[in-house]
Image (cartoon, rainbow, N blue to C red; front, side):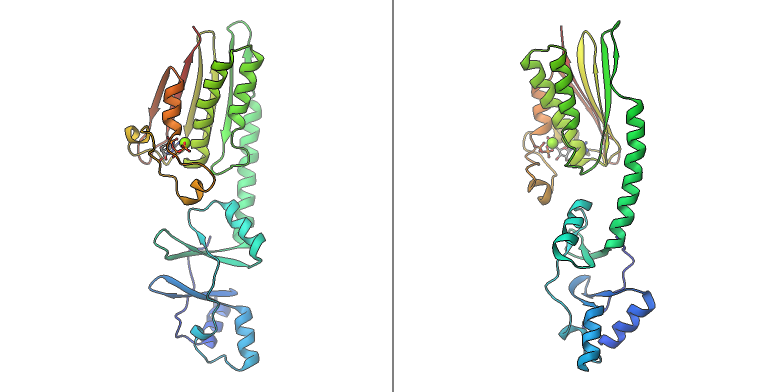
Amino acid sequence: MSSDLVTAAKTETLRTIQHRMKEASITGVPIVEDKRLLGIISMHDILTAFDEGTIDEAAESHMTRNIKVLEDDMPLSFAISYFNKYLYGRFPVLNKNRELCGIITIRDINTTLLREVNRIVEELEGELKQDVSEDSDSGVISFQHYVVRHDFENAGRASADIKRILKAHGFDPQTIRRAAVASYELEMNLVVHSHGGRLSFRMDPEKIEIRTIDTGPGIPDVDKALEVGFSTANEWIRSLGFGAGMGLANVQRVVDDFFLKSAKGKKTDATAIIKRL
Ligand SMILES: Nc1ncnc2c1ncn2[C@@H]1O[C@H](COP(=O)(O)OP(=O)(O)OP(=O)(O)O)[C@@H](O)[C@H]1O
Ligand SMILES: [Mg+2]
């Protein structure tokens, strides 16, 4: 998203706005008052104004008012779905106070996607190197799984892998269920709340260990986060069915030991242990 915004006031004329567009090489200008978005003047509006002889009139009477906007904490996939759904070339972005804080174009999307693809390829290369390792002498099985922020499409893969491994090793259904609950909740917290991270699974003759370490943004109050019903999930996360504030409490309930280390601005390190003996 570009936050270096070129905007105009509702009283400015379309001609002034057209000059501003030309100078900045852009094709749309948000009309703003006290940081509030009132409308947008696009190149199409300018061309129509030239056509109809209204180019010296104020933006106010020609701007598009019913604008589809994005919110600054929405994931990229939401932005992409807007471009597909509404066929506009740009969407203004609002912050929590409903103030205009940026504008996103299809070009921004392409650049971000390319960067993301490169990052995922690098991660996959790393992951392939660390595929499931099994040492039959010591009975240790381990693997790591990278979890990408807001990647709801692949969410749940790590816990599905854990379930499969435990099943293949003849674990009883209750242990498998406990490990599945713990790993799913921790994995989903990486997807929903973290900047991304790693889930690692390790099993030895004594215990099953499921651990997630992420890259932030950290939990300011760990005790509070463990309380049933406490959640900082925002509205769109809740619309996807998450954010009941049950996850960490569920992990604590189903495992034998649970350690949660975090602080505001730091990584979150969560370790869940199920004893085998
Ligand atoms: N990895 C993490 N990074 C940052 N914050 C986290 C992380 N995991 C949990 N939290 C914080 O702890 C809170 C409680 O987590 P918990 O899993 O119990 O509930 P939830 O994820 O909000 O909802 P649910 O798990 O029921 O869908 C979260 O809302 C979030 O504020
Ligand atoms: Mg959760």
